[in-house]
Image 1 (cartoon, rainbow, N blue to C red):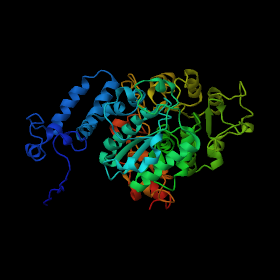
Image 2 (image 1 turned 120 degrees about the horizontal axis):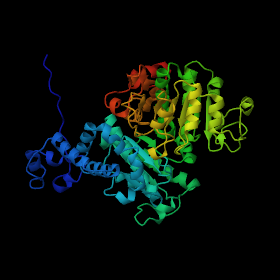
Image 3 (image 1 turned 45 degrees about the horizontal axis):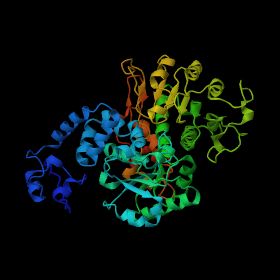
Image 4 (image 1 turned 90 degrees about the horizontal axis):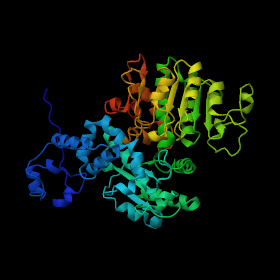
Length: 541
């Protein structure tokens, strides 16, 4: 049977000469053919040799290896991205395992902290509060007309690093890079945005190199009006765009997600993306431990919007596995800086109130103080799973992990805080403290020492990578909700599908593979083809 070659339509571009070489989406550098050099007025502007993309990538790889620090490698890759995106993504595809932690967490944390210092070329859109009445004009300046995915941050809660001002732009840039590298979304369809409403980081305000607005953060009604002007301008120019809220502070994250749920296709990665990946990981980890998720007791360290979002999705999954809501909630324990959340605690946030434990139900617990510590909870609740979203390093101590292991043969421990400088415990320590019995998943790639050589079940799972790159493709997210707008249910569908995208590991049972092995090779089920979606009832349209 003869197969006709696929025809490629011609691309007509308004650029030529030096301008074309400065346009990263179209620049091919030394890969421009002789004919292209003649047609685009490039003769004499490039060395004589015409190279293939692989030859270019090999040179770039050699140069990359010459850099000794991760931040220098990050800067180098960003420079390629800003000059030749085709080469950038080929290089990343060829060396995904090596480069993913450099493009995103953990290295992106340092890149955000040093954003103004290492700044070279503009990428994305910077919208400061003073220009709030020119929002439409600002978005009209974006040269790409068919934007499909926007990742926006206000820089207030960047990873576990806090307020980084416009330095937070490193997160949308890095995340969209992964959506292209791992999800196949054209970079021409993506747009990173930072909303510059000032910063409360005094170190940045005092830094002469800081490139953002030098005033304290705009708050209250002024802040929400500014964000609303941005949302309306986005809807006006790109009505079908997917808007991802990224690293907004807890006090703003949930209100913004709730407010715009029916106005624009949107989701919050910290709340929904993290929840989906965590649920999928726990389903697989529970199987590896020889049980089901509905049989687990789970303790969280960190009861912010991300932690509570994960908890609610876990509870929903437990209900789907047969537990009543009351029983499921009784299996989840939330610990924050004031101790275990209980029904007699004052000043709880709205999303925390459904996740409290009845103080009466704890009457038989052996407690040292009125405030119930993480160690108290582990000792009395006897959890199978421990999840860290605290943003504080070292809080999973040896005493806590060993106490957990006393009553749990295969503890599941997930220190998810980013970047690695904020992780609650290292995989090496957790494995050592449990004599190799623990199943461990981290939020970022963490140096695992010689764990692989010891044949222990640790993989550096890139938190929130598996699902968000799939959602923006538009196959599922835009159809998943009662109104066809918000991502409600998308995390349920994707989280349930994630364990089916694994392979069987050498530890005798299913596990979630590491970012380098599974992401490029697997694709979650799409839209109406997803069994998890079909089982969930008529949410997909």
